[in-house]
Length: 89
Image (cartoon, rainbow, N blue to C red; front, top):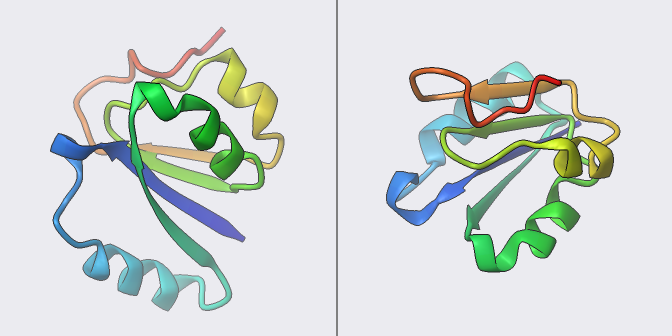
């Protein structure tokens, strides 16, 4: 299982050691990846999420392109109010 934590730099914590420890405790075999998202590196993000099972984000746009490139994606966890960044159609 691959869990991707990704968002814009200003929305990311300085360290994700706590989140990684919690996720590894619950899913010992999981690969937890941290990726600082930028619109300019959208293609790189799409490559990172291509084999992810879960995405933890707040403001990264999750649209049809993401869903098309991430066939294993089962969970999108938003640490923000609302879900307008996720294309539900």
